[in-house]
Amino acid sequence: MPEVWVYAEVTHAGVVDTTALELLTRARSLGADVAAVVLGPGASRAAGTLGDYGASRVYLSDDDVFGDFVAQPATKALDQLVTEHSPEMLMFATNYDSRDIAGRLSAKTGATLMSNATGVSGLDRAQTAISGGSLMVDVVLRGSPKIVLVRPKSFAAEAMGGVAEVINVEARIPDELRQARRRERQEQDAAGPNLEDAGIVIAGGRGLQAPDNFKLLDRLAGLLDDCAVGATRAVVDAGWVPYAYQIGQTGKTVKPGVYIAAGISGATQHLVGMKGAKRIVAINKDGDAPIFEVADLGVVGDAVKVLEQLIEEVKRRKGQT
Amino acid sequence: MNVVVCVKHVPDPNAPVEIQDNRIKRTGVQNVLDPGDMYGIEAGLLLREALGGEVTVISMGPVQAVEAIKRALSMGADRGVMISDDALTGADSLVTARVLAAAIRRAGFDLVIAGVESTDGYTGTMPSSLAEFLGLPQVTFAKRLSASASSVTVDRQTASGYHVVECSLPALVTVTAGVNEPRYPSFKGIMAAKKKPLEHLTLDHLGMSAADAEVEQEIVQISAVDERKSGTRVANDEAAARIADLLAEAKAI
Ligand SMILES: Cc1cc2nc3c(=O)[nH]c(=O)nc-3n(C[C@H](O)[C@H](O)[C@H](O)COP(=O)(O)OP(=O)(O)OC[C@H]3O[C@@H](n4cnc5c(N)ncnc54)[C@H](O)[C@@H]3O)c2cc1C
Ligand SMILES: Nc1ncnc2c1ncn2[C@@H]1O[C@H](COP(=O)(O)O)[C@@H](O)[C@H]1O
Image (cartoon, rainbow over all chains, first blue to last red; front, side, top):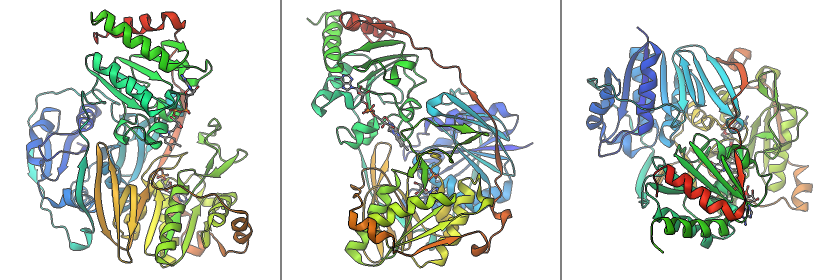
């Protein structure tokens, strides 16, 4: 039986990246045996979850080397496993570390690689959305293995209640692959719900005109349940908010119940990150802005004024005024 | 410090994408130096100014892509290497990495710099594949970069912050927008660029053949997706109430 492998990123606490669970769920439907590979501190603790989502085997190592050094040790370990077991397809999430490892593994093994996939329809076939999701590109992959990098939220994650066999990976990583060392980790703790999981996302763009106006989004979010704040790359690059807020091609993918775009033009690179929202509200003073083409509810007007009115309206409904 | 910077010539990102024969149309459209690669060029120039050495700019693509190199030379890079070959039409990121690696190997270097992702293809994996072919460690997503003669230190962006990564040289680094403020070419720079060494290579020069350029994936179809329909427009005086209705429906109020 052909094998499909999912590479899973894991935190030190053993929490598996959600996208890996989405990929496992998808892999189950491809008529192949499904396995997962998880490397670095936390890996053993992830095995249960990976089995629950469909991995029949989990190749793992808790070795610090995979966390301490960028990309090279994981590529080496994966290359050994691939040589030994010849999986047909390897699926990665388009996350930072995964993308690096997949690129290296492609060169190391000669495996063809498809990036930014939004669909996987067979062991040799995947799809990707371009032009802000308005065009779907269908790609046939040849050779073995094939590497597919899949965008987060392309599939729903569903547990199936399985238990995985655990196979420990011997990590013999030579010194020449221990060059790019992580010296320090700076993580910003975002307040409120995680942007990727929030039921409501309010995002701001350059049309908010000043970093101070961006605070209106925080005020509104504070009044709503399960709401997080996001941003376009334009305002992230301008330094208004940290990169962790960025939604789009090079940022996060969100799929909330309601997405409010305030002062956002709707560039294709932004749209790919939020087009999956159930309802989209756009506030933009330019009636021809592309964001209106995907909006369920469009307001042509000044974003700051509309946000201020909305804050008052929400307060009123909550009986706060 | 000798730096090699990878640059790509891409269709003007401000123009709509045109598709021809299941591929992004690259000829007969306005092409520019990938805006994302200007940061890589600037990073190379800053390192040369601090540590000495030379900046070589390299690109693979159709002949006219040499314009991207010329732009980099006018910003101040020292020399250019352009690789063009009919066999490379339709090359994917793996083939691109294999070819660039062969060309970069011929030049002595301490550091290779590329963009995090290209504006047209945005696979974002070419640099990692290139690093593997060259046997180099890599630090991607640099939002801050400093170097000594023997190592680089990078603030590497993560989903929720950044990691400080230190890496011995030689190495490959990819830079994000925001790592620096790219300079504009000066008139003097544009004039000087005309006299700078510019090498044109084919697969032959690199000891490679069409077999090395074979792509193991194929686009079989490009189709329009059922577009989201744009919904209703509401007047400003109703806006707050209508948005609040939606939020209430979603149980956020
Ligand atoms: C390789 C690559 C990757 C990228 N990745 C991303 C990504 O991940 N995420 C992302 O967001 N972008 C990304 N971009 C950038 C993207 O192309 C756009 O430049 C960006 O999304 C624009 O942000 P914006 O809408 O805030 O700004 P603008 O495009 O400048 O739009 C501002 C909007 O505000 C409106 N406006 C002005 N004043 C007001 C007012 N008073 N009230 C209401 N509206 C007003 C204007 O009409 C305009 O439509 C990427 C680009 C490239 C090349
Ligand atoms: N054909 C090419 N020639 C030179 N550099 C390239 C080429 N393709 C990609 N690159 C470099 O690799 C980076 C990432 O590209 P990509 O992996 O295609 O998204 C770009 O920003 C460039 O610096």
